[in-house]
Image (cartoon, rainbow, N blue to C red):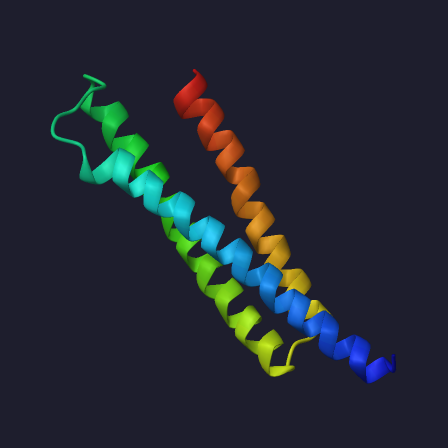
Length: 113
């Protein structure tokens, strides 16, 4: 196997991995929208300030998840075309993991407390 074959194989694997990550992230975002927004008919928390802050924080997080999904889609398309750099993939991964870490704190403060 030549170096070119290895590079093409790794680009294909990268594109498949990024596509899988994108589908998982889109599925989680869709489930959150379905559970927290579209099925809401009244304020189950009682206090309007808590509900407002909850939806602002989770909506802001949802926007960043959507932005991360867009970035991952662009990186996956570039990887499928063979036009990616290790730095671009690393930056997309860092952004995605930052959004994930933020969700850990949002979950802890809004769901566990």
